[in-house]
Length: 392
Image (cartoon, rainbow, N blue to C red; front, side):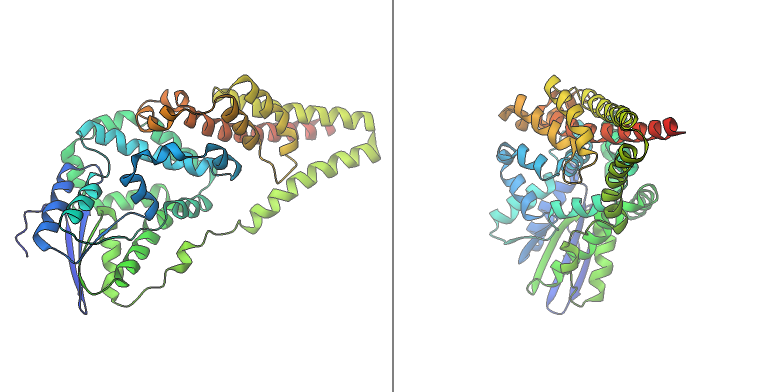
């Protein structure tokens, strides 16, 4: 059918006995939701594939899933930055959606509802969001992460100024290509895992599906990339894209080399110079590291006990590869200010304001963990430079 009243970009391809129809949407577009419904009803496909993983499908189907989040496990497993990144990136999208009066991901919910109504099977084709974020994080420098975090937190003005017509225009091929190219230019480290790898992954999932007519509902930014892989027509291996890269050799070396160097320095001072002087140097370094971590926790408006725990843990965590200052301060914060059910329920709304990042107990725990680690690193660096000056 070629006269379907759909304005969203569509690409069709036939591979053997399989017809694949890609529809590119904007996740905060009311028109996209209407187009998805119209296309499914008009084409009556044998399957509807959606740009979701099983976890995100569960989150859409069960909005109460946040209530079951174990914040202690998140901290212990060192996933505070991953979760903070995920929540921060979704905040900007929701601000736009609220302004336009549409629910984020409405087109996916419409696809699920329409398919269920017509008894059409649903297939999720996206990679697990946790794997995507972990692979992205492995390629992300600290400064790139800071750029994403703070640009999202302080982008309220731009979200308010973005109109529905501008969002619809972004779905057009020329506008979309320019937007993707600009994204690649600004953050080339993460385009590969967030866009390119998922284009390949989702195309591979479509190619391995049974013959028949398949409608794939996906973000317009994936349309061109996926179509390129589908044109090859042959099966694509994708298991390697589910592997989380191990830390680089350099990061492994730095993880152990710095603590070993600090310990070796103080041992040398005790044995070959002056034990009393070495103790003074050790005290100076520990105080600088502890103060840095405490100030980091303070910036996150942590509880006094969390601030104290950050300061006490920092000198030990700085020389112990198996301990992170943020784990300690984050766990203490979660203990003394345990998140309430309402905190999980209100994450989306609280993230609509800068103060909400600190008001919501879940977000504040994540900030305490992240800022404590950053403060520890700054304090340790300052303390080490102070030692060098004192030796000279």
